[in-house]
Image 1 (cartoon, one colour):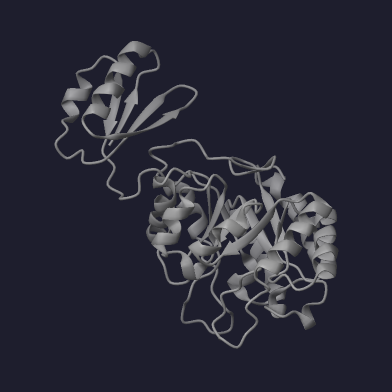
Image 2 (cartoon, one colour):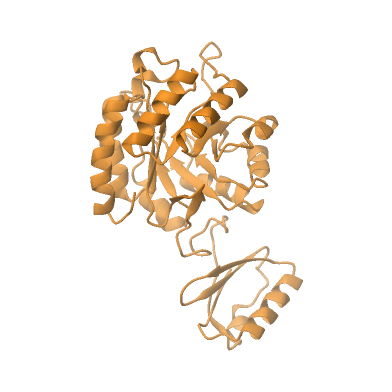
Length: 336
């Protein structure tokens, strides 16, 4: 349930209402806009009478929320959330490009790629240290050594870093990581999500390859319910009957998520198709559909990449894409 207060609501009466609701065992989610203040009620509101709230002279309207997700719900938080990542803003009109190799391989690779993507205009650096692979015989990443190399690249370029966590036991290793990524296979690892709810840093949550948008939002709710409301949603392609591409980018997910939630929404065009020639058109489509950013895989030698070389752009290819991104983003009302 959401209570919309009048613009001129007396502060003492607002405080009295908040105290009363708290004593009823409800958790409150407050959202202050330019003209209105919302009080979102989290808990069992089935016995509450809407008429009782309308009787108060400080209440403008009352609305019941049917969706099971509350903190992630745009009705609770009408304004777009802006995530600040070491001074780099994402969401609320701020568009960002996250770029880097699928896997951290060597020091030379990470430094070279990080310097190249920064020069082209990327705002954040990605790189996988722990890699969830379908085959147990495929390259699984360098683990903690990979994290060290990623952080060296961060120090060399100043770019905030994004990397994926696989299990709760690794959390201490991510102390200096700026954005923790939850991959598609862990989207419903609820115990991991609960722990990430206790962390004070942004979480990039990828949609499961076979999950609905509401399931994605419920996973975000797990993190937010724990106290961490710095969640970035990522559409990375879903499983369909199509076999000519690795996945199918659900472009319609972007405007729908924008309607359902206030959280930033980005797109991973690299994993969406698994083919480098499709990265540019899917990036342009994401911008046009209203995405707040994209995450693109870049490798200095894709042919010899230990992971996902087919979908990785060379630095030169990435630079060409960035030229078009820089032109398209302001056209669609955002800043890069």
